[in-house]
Image (tube, rainbow, N blue to C red; front, top):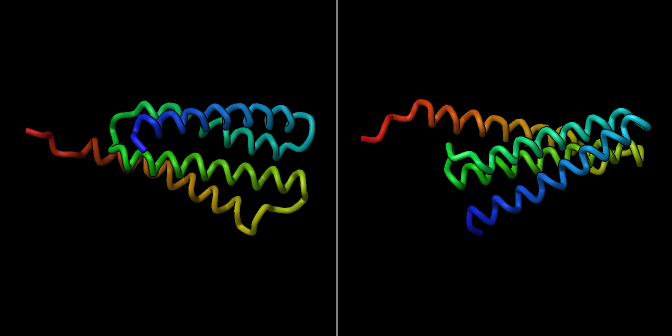
Length: 124
């Protein structure tokens, strides 16, 4: 899939993450505060994804992998938290921590790409 098409996929997911994030924040204010935590996780990463789609400091493949880590990681983290609140049980064992680690790797991807660009030798 072309880079532009992936950008649209990630923007679509960002919109959904933002919508669900606000919904969970509202639910968290009336029910269980953990829903608010899941909502914040989605909202933050929706905003980061929108910004990263527009970024031009990393290669298309690196950007794709970083965006996948952020979207998938935050999504499974939030889904597991919601499952714990609504069902009283996680979706799968260790799913929230796995989502958290994937998300952290996505953030490190941003730092790594920026650092590589910052310290790259200028092209002659």
